[in-house]
Each structure stands twice: as structure tokens, then as C-alpha cells.
Image 1 (cartoon, rainbow, N blue to C red):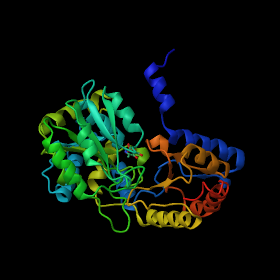
Image 2 (spheres, helix red, strand yellow):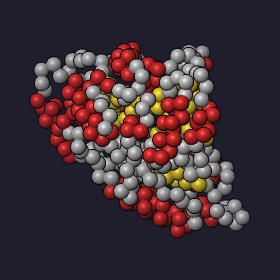
Image 3 (spheres, rainbow, N blue to C red):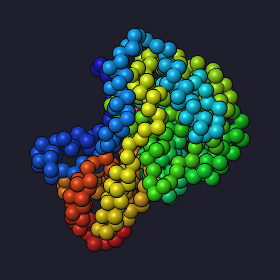
Length: 395
Ligand SMILES: Cc1ncc(COP(=O)(O)O)c(C=O)c1O
């Protein structure tokens, strides 16, 4: 056996998202692309903003001397300083270029931070439902996952978090706006969490996973976590905000209020290297430094959210509108989400079962499909509902 047992086991548990996406490829070949409505993958549908692409072209054309060589592992000083400047403006916290490490996407940032923080057996609290790769990021670095349920409305249950803290707890992962639920954690709940973290008898890092921060609806604003939580490390990327997921550009930023912030920054410089990333993609660091104000048109996602939520509610589904991110976490009309996913599949709709995110009885639908796909899929959702025995479909 060439593959490590632990990886073999992880592969078996791993992503429902990928599994359903691959099932989609098979079904499209079998039934024709236009008859399959694939809501599985969160691959941003919108092109990068024109200003971002123009900056990229200009920098590529300029081909400045040395621009393809090694650089400091944490990234170009100009890119790090640009991130710090924006964070100072948005959070009021005195981030500096030294607080920032440019990374290979947000996933890279999380792994770099976790490798720098965790010892074997260190515990990491993850509120459920959760982005499934978190559990692997934690075990990558010898950590142990401690899951905590959220409340009925998927807001943080701070009392449950408090009671799950042990002397081995080193990190809590927070993701707001949340994938898969679309919930934005309120400033009040974050203040309660800050109080719990401040009363802990050792530092616990809030690892704030923020790739969806700018994707919010109805004029909502996602509270600045770093303004509220002292012991915080932000991880994020331009994957969703600029539709650049394939370019792998992100960063981590360590709050100067975190005890040992400077030492952690040096440690992340090292872990970025020894994880094999070395540094983040050079040209995209430069683009990020020069086009910071740009953003994709979020109105498109809001239109799709409204079309999908409105359509599903009209058919008879119990819908809760996401406040941010680009997913709908839909309650299934029967408790067994896997069974309902199979029923939808029969009608040509592909969705990820909530079980894959640690919460059965729900499915996740990604809004990164074209608007037309949403409109054409609604009759299929109606047919699936109609196939349930009458007592089951009473939501
Ligand atoms: C919640 C969450 N965190 C992190 C990531 C990873 O982002 P990136 O592609 O920038 O590495 C994703 C990607 O879908 C995500 O949904």
C-alpha cells in the first residue's frame, strides 16, 4: 500500500462537494449539459473586475527586473503594507506590514497559521456546520478538532464554546459570512466571545476565515472581527471577492493585540516556506497592492439569491435567506438529506448534503451558477417535492 492509512481514511471521509461535482460531470455526459442543474461548487461566476485585469496586464507587460525571482517568504513589502493599510482603516487596529504574510489563497493562509500555532494534540474548536476542509487543515498539523454546535439560527453558541475550552485549546475557527449557512455573526455575539476568550487562562487564537467578507446582501455589513476580538488572526483571499480562485492569492494578518504577535509573524514566515509554498504568486501580490479598492459586482449574486429563495419559497420549501456568501443552506423536506439529494438528482439537480458540513437535514446550493440555470431548475425542485408522500412534504 503506497498511500498512508491516514490519508486513505481522509479520502473516504472527504469532500461531498467534490463527489457531487464529479457525479455532475457523469450525469451531464449521460443526459446532456442543459438538463443538469449543478449547484455543488463555489467557483465564483463573475469575472475579475476590469481594473484588476488591467493592472495585471500592465504589470505583466512592464516585466520589471527581478519580478520572477524569489522574494522574502512573507511577500513583497509593498503588498504587505497595502494590506496593513486597509486593515488599519477598516478595523482601527494598528496592523503593520510585519503583521501580514501573503499566502497561496486562504487555504494556504489557514495552513500556514495552524502549522505555526499547533503542537501535537492541540485542540481547535470548530462551530458546526463548517467548511469541510477545516478538519483536514487541523489534522495536517497534528491538531485535534473539537466540534461545537451552533444555535438553531446558526449563530454562535458562546456558552457551548466556553464549555468546550480545555487547557489544550489553542484555536477557534470562525467563518463569517459563513459557508455553508450564509449567516453573519453579529457584533454582540462576537463581543460575548471576546469576553470568554479574555477570561481563558491561556491565549486562544480566533482564526477568522474571511474570504466572503465583501459578499453581503441587503446592505448588511460584516462586523470587523479584528476590532472586537483581540487574539485574532485574519485569513482571507481574493478568490471570491475578485473571482480569482484559480490564481491562489490571499494573506494572513496577525492582530498586534495578540500576545506574541511578532513571534507568530516570524513563525508564519517560516511555515509558509517549509510547507512548500515558499511565497505567494508574485504578480498577483503586486496586483493586490495596486488595485485594492476594486470589487466584483455583488448585485449579481443578490439577484440570484432573491430569484432562488423566492422561487423555492413559492414552491413550498422552508427558505432562510443567506445574509452573505454565495450559498443557500436549505432545509430538506425530509430529515434524511442524503435521500433528498438522491431524489433531486433524479430530477437533474445536484446539491451537496448538509451531512458533508456536519449538519444533516439540509442541503447546500451554490449561487455561482448562471441566473438562467436557477430559473430553469425550479420546476425540477417542484417535481422532487411533489414526489414525497404528502405527510413528508408538510414543511
Ligand atoms: C469557508 C472557506 N474558507 C476557505 C476557502 C479557501 O479559499 P481559497 O480558495 O482562497 O484558498 C474556501 C473556499 O471555498 C471557503 O469556502
